[in-house]
Length: 175
Image 1 (cartoon, rainbow, N blue to C red):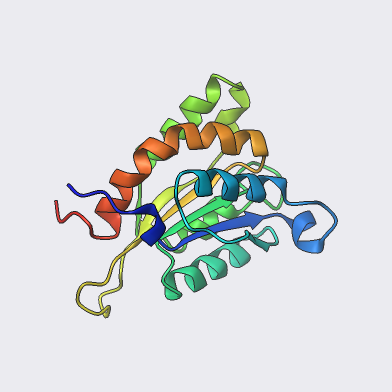
Image 2 (image 1 turned 90 degrees about the horizontal axis):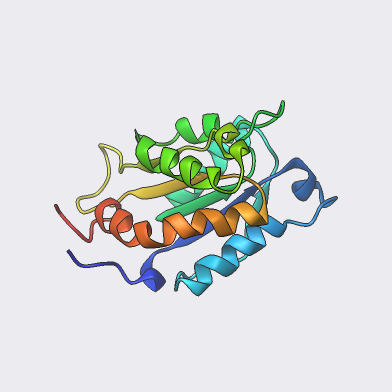
């Protein structure tokens, strides 16, 4: 299997936070995630910041897929606060969930805090639609909790998995 060059994978960091979207809180988790992805070789711009909510997440993901983004990592909105609907908005878009990866992230987080099990984050694939052009490729979506510390802990797990996941999802391996 050939691994994709991270520089060739259009990547987006999506920060889901009412306060960051309103400008009343700095987006430290999205900034940290961009830093970590860049260190791994991914070409990623500044985070896109959106308010909490199912609709805002769903719409942002649909735009990202339409615009050719192949890797989306979101931060925030995965807990149980009243406006935490990132998983629901993500499920509106993904066609196949990767439950094992989401559970692996939660289990890995347990070594830092038992609160990792409160994360309802989803990992999944947005497959090209039936009307997609031949050779169309998918998008990998990963929901992460909204703290800089969680970004460090999550990337410990994700960094070694991303090359294989992307090879499968975006078509570098027809396995």
